[in-house]
Amino acid sequence: MTTVTHRSAPVGPARAGRRRPGARGRHALRALPLLPSVVLLAIFLLGPIVWSFYGSLTNASLTGPGAAHPEFVGFANFSQLFADPVFPASVILTVVFVAASAIIGQNMLGMWVAVLMTRATRVVSAIVGTLIVTAWVLPEIVAGFISYAYFSKDGTLNQLLHAIGLTGPNWLYSFPMVTIILANIWRGTAFSMMIYQAALGDVPPEITEAAEIDGASGSQRFFLVTLPMIKNSVATNLMLITLQTLSVFTMIWVMTMGGPGNKSSTLPVLAYREAFQFGDIGYGTAIAAVMIVIGAVFSIAYVMLLRDKGVRR
View (cartoon, rainbow, N blue to C red):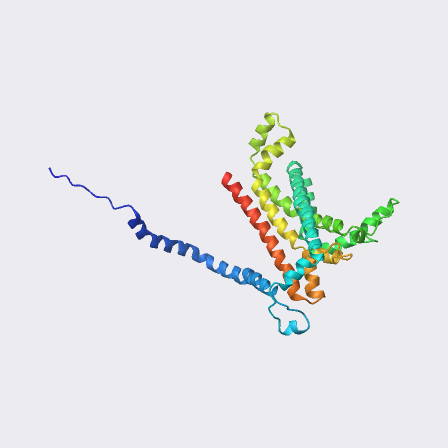
């Protein structure tokens, strides 16, 4: 009897090498529909960023020789910026504004309201949700004028204080950053509330019920069971509201114009003043470039946080 031996096809680097061109072609075809989006992002996102960094290295201005023929000056604008005592003060104000109004205010208040709305009746939940979302859907300039009318010397707040026999200060002059932070919390809390409301709706009720049966209190169920299950939503919300708050300009400009003096001059306001009030476009663009770097640092930190959480899962 003759034994016929069937040789299997060789499996190794040679065969893998023959498959590789076809696999690459399939990957290229799958990525092809993304090409228009990549092109649009490169034109409308990457292009302005690159151009702004280039503008920060020039002496471009609104008037004078720099308006008609801007020249390349290297890092002169950044050297002047880091030597300016107003700049570190604006950085501190920006950090305080973002931390107080977004990371602490909007984030924690949005979480608290979302938790309360999950326990409230449908009517109460609908009324509260509508009132909070109304502030968020208002254009920023309208929200700024409303906040100005509320905190101004003869505004709504002082009228209410006067009705009970108290005299309020000029809030916008005496406490500019406090008023701006409160106004931004009022306007932006709805965004965090909606994210957390959706996240809490995805938490299986049987898990919290089991924790309740085991004797866990309400705060223990929230911090030990619910919060770890929505941690990705928390990180995503923090990233979005941090970047949104970092770029707030209109509300601050309408309420205080960065004043009095520079007491509420965050980085966006400082960049606008230098570029369009004082006409130094290159210097103002250098401030904007620093803002881009700060936003990129926050984004990378939050993305790494999300990735770590995803890997642990």
